[in-house]
Image 1 (cartoon, rainbow, N blue to C red):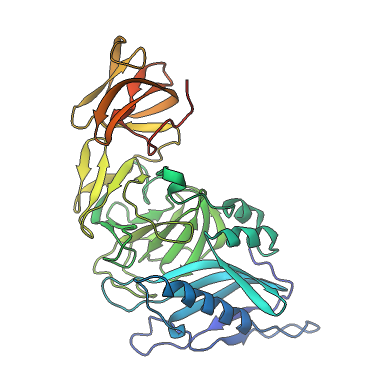
Image 2: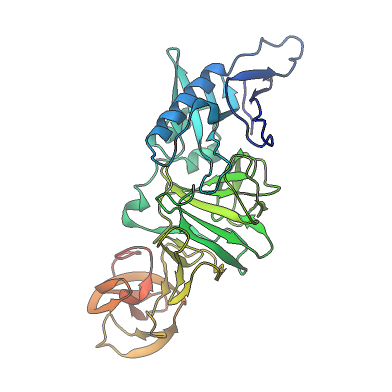
Length: 400
């Protein structure tokens, strides 16, 4: 939704690089102004905010060993203006080479005493500015709330499905690797196949970073990136639900990088930075790192490496777990928190369970180590936490 006290339309134009015309470079902020209607005020210039956002973006990139950029590679798009406030996207285009991908942020900026204060999505200052900004919607303010600690303080739950339709199986063409390729953190995976429709992994607000690249900002400080898309949606803060259409898998490299076959390059961010996708649960799979592109994912005891299919089981709730019998086949349900209680049934490896509360009992050792924690399921039975993946090393729904 455009919010602007001046109805004149603005966009920042950039000269094109001769080779292929695919990458737009910012060598200067050139303001293109639609002819204003009669009796309107003279149009204002966005050059100052573009310069401030560019400087902030380059300063941020200088702190990353994986990114080396100049102002010529910055693409700043001011999508909303209202007086001393501005909002938009800030992108650094990348070379058209393997192991290169564009980087960028959503920004909110405010002019005070002749200077622009700029903050990027995920930063505490971003939520603070957004809370006061007239160019930010109420829906966005809820998503932009103060971010959680990274990994939510040791909590690797995301509430996300895989970025395609629940019930489909796609191929993991590239295991965990960096957003730009082989650099750390290994925040990203490559997926292909199915009906080729890329969907939001979780609800949030969506933004077009550049052609073929969509970012969705979620709760708990998380956001997800989707690159190489064809026919992607054009959005500027639209609310999207989990499973919403974002585009089709493709090979688009308008903002840099390379793609030899159609796929989606899916990246995980938290608090304005890419974070390791390893150990996070997405679509009821737990991703596991290794050498770049060579890691995989685990659902219960089942393993899927590069070239394997990933079935989208959907979202794992924040008080749910996935049974990981550690190769044992089934997990015994008991009448109380320990092996001294009667066995009253079993659960299959990979099953989803809902947890009502937890207590300590007999100690057992599973894939992730030894624990005395037991979980009471919503059906009244108990299982050892050693054989569940919940994303948390502890009680996830309080103590019994």
